[in-house]
Image 1: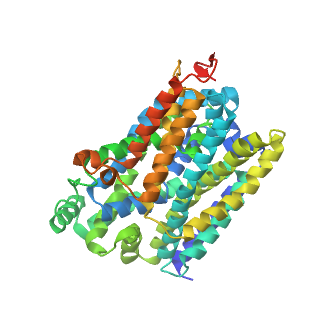
Image 2: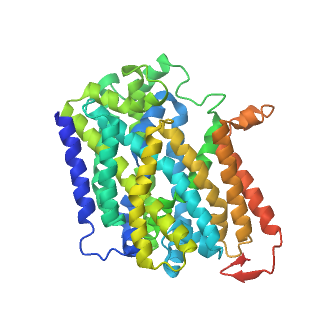
Image 3: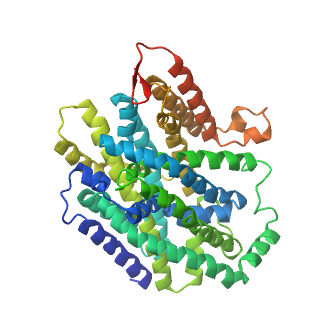
Length: 490
């Protein structure tokens, strides 16, 4: 067994140990398991949200897109900063409402705001469907990272099975507490590794960051700018908008809001997180550095750029540390996704269908659903699939469909009805599904439009359809109107 593999498995065991130990001294009811008893301070909430934001995508997707796409990659830095600006105003309101009504999931929020348990069921199902490709993304990344960092000693399939088993165990035992403690190690690791690689590799191979960009531009003129067609300026703007609006619509990110002990936690995080976003810039530098040093990676193989360049450059023990950091970037968000999806199905689907179910029964069901959801995700993982970023963008297109009804629910006089919210989300999700299944784009659907319009991210089209349907249906009188909690309820 090589030193890289020893290092990786040492951190795997450490994460498992921390995840299991996090349960100690706590009565692990559903509230503790899902939202940590609403007692996390600024640091833990920061680590949880960073753990969900900086995932295998940070390691593989960011460097892979820098390697394969060039200039369009910088959208990844832009959307996070915009989302943090929105969070300063939005998240404290969500937290206060959730605390007042003892909410435990994103679906609870919609069901309560619109006085409709069935809308909550629908939102829960949309959330689970969106979370599956996100979990698949983590598992694919996990297999790639460990297999490459171990010099092929262990195949990706075995890695994924081992990782899923470890995450499933500590999620069932400790819930969000296990994720939070594992996130502590993960964030220290990823910060150190990403910054080191982003500085060392450009200087090692090119003599600096500017000479690296000059060499890439000379070899591939125009690669570092936005193209005139395809991923053009309009694509960039629409993609940044889509992902910024959908940033906190992921069910596991939304649910982590409830774990804070005060609303001020989010204002502090909104100040610090944009700085932490710069970690991605160092990952991009690695991808750009790999262009001339590891040529020939096509399609989804571009996601291997960071690891292949690292293996080519460093001793095995250093590669092991890089692989260990990558391992943790998959396990932390993967654990949150598993916990959130199981909670949504148990509390917001099963308990609505079977209202006689007790909280204790729902808590047990949520834990039993964790391995089932893990197995479903494994099935889709082994079926193959798209690149890391493509999977992420598909999930974003789905969860962003919740944004119009969500943001309007925060207003004092919300005109949206439960019928309007349901119809709008359904129309948006149906549009996303059609576009993805048919492989369409705005350009293929409307070839006579201006190029700038053709290049729009298709998720924006779905969001526009969603908003129009939400407004129109909300204006249709379905029956007597009553005003409750600053909104119109049917």
